[in-house]
Amino acid sequence: QLHPLYLSGCPTTANCGSLGTPTNPALSCEHLKSVCADTASDFYYIESAGLYHKVFCEMDIEGGGWARYGRSNQGTTWNYVDEDAAEITLDIINASEVKEMTDLKYNRFLVQTDVVFKMKADDSVNPSRLTTRSLPWLEESPLFIPDYGNDHTRIEFPSGSVDRVTCIPGSSSKCGQGGGLPTANGLSKPFFFQSLFFSPRGTGASAHNDQWNRNKYTWDGSYYFVYAK
Image 1 (cartoon, rainbow, N blue to C red):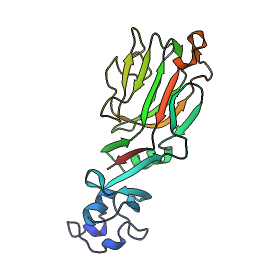
Image 2: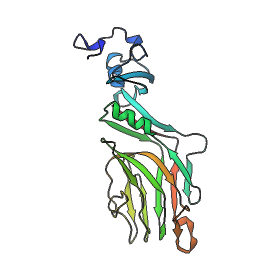
Image 3: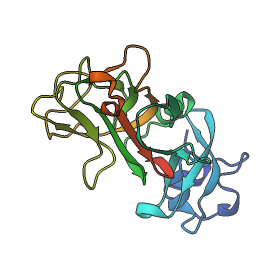
Image 4: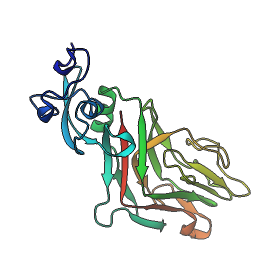
């Protein structure tokens, strides 16, 4: 069944002021942008396949019409730099948001963040586990440094990209040997982070001569957003 604004065969600005409200939901943020070009970024109501969602629509970046998911920094939660002690769990995109992305059948994604991310094991075992979602399929996959980190294994965002990671090796490493790690100096496939569990000294952790700075992570920034159409 076509949305009322499409019954004439093309979008119209009729009732533009009410589009995206509970009584007149849009088909998507992109639909709302196409009908009401000057609509501001804000929360709007979206209907798809009989399901209603209240979604934040980003109307300014990359042409607008994107649904936005993710988190911004709260207090000092995201100020971890070369951390080798604190165990933290961060939920970046919750399960209901992933379900919403699936329900709304998004197939285009854009990840934006100012976060600096690194995680390493160096002659050590780092039990940290990160959960990712592949793009554009949203398949869940773990990302971790498997077993003993050999001479050096470090994962981080490559220069100019935040929707994949690279693996930096020492003379020997775990790059390309499981845990979702790309090959040495290679790139992973595109993804976004769903949740993060950093545990440099947690159960199963070890470090050569108890030098815990061999197990370190950095998650330092103010926002991590995933935009979808």
